[in-house]
Image (cartoon, rainbow, N blue to C red; front, side, top):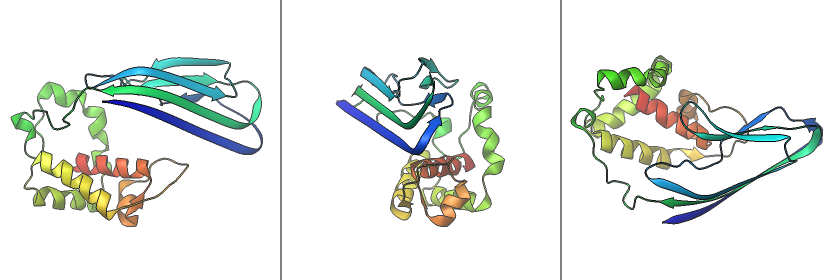
Length: 194
């Protein structure tokens, strides 16, 4: 299946401002499940330099350096991707990942250290929320992930929030609402707690 994706972001300022270097994560990733057929990025004002790169996790990014001041910044990206998997559920879970908590092999566990260091930040309220879902799903990883997704979709209000880092997971849980990044961070903290 092919998808055409158009992104357009326009920022307007009350007076001209100077732009520090910007990093854009807007180019779709290519992997075994998705092929990038076309990608175009247009920035206005045009940057002095725009260089593609990858971050430490393999995500595509662009770094742009601007010259002078401007009262607006326009970002336009056009992408065409081909999704190679027709069935999103055609995967295989190894035995050590069927029931929570996941039982990582030693070599895999070491590679995940940076992702697990925030575990102590997960609050009791978030841990309890995730644990109730895990218990309801009898510890099944597959059912836990699906039910967590459903629970967030049904019980949390989606809002627009143009600025700022994701809220802490306990804030999102308390408010029962959040922007996309808040809900995604909440989902990850629930998973991390399990």
